[in-house]
Length: 140
Image (cartoon, rainbow, N blue to C red; front, side, top):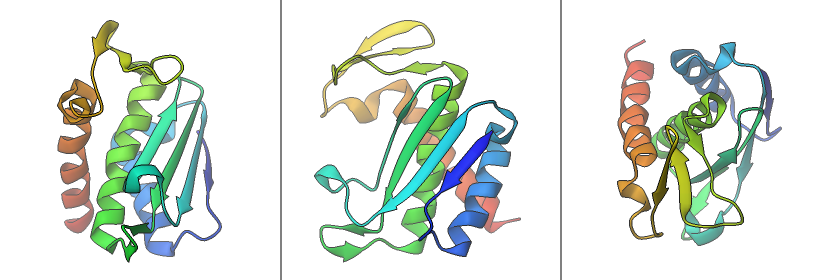
C-alpha cells in the first residue's frame, strides 16, 4: 500500500498509523491511502473517510467545537477511520453515489439517514475496532 501522510502529523500519530495499518492488515493491500490532519471538519466531526478498492482519503480533526482534540481521541479516530479504509479496500463497504444515504455492505444495499448512520454495520464494526486497536496500542 502506498501511504501518504500530512506533513504536520505528529510522530505519535505516524507511529500509531503504522501500528494500526499492520493490525488491520491494510499494509498488505494494493492501493493508496491518504491521511490529512485538518484543523476543523464539516459538522465538527472527529474524522471523515471515503474511498473505494483502489484509493482511500481520510481527514482527522485537530479541533472540535473550537477546542483541541485530545491525543486519545485522535488515536481512536484514526483507528475508527482506518477500519473504514479496510472496509473500502476489501469492497465490504461501497459508498453510495452523489451523497445518497444508501451504501452497500457485503453486497447488500443499506439505506440510512444521518441520524441512523451510527447504527449501520460498518459503523458498528468501526466502533468495536477503534477500541480494540487503541487497547492493543496501549498494551504493546
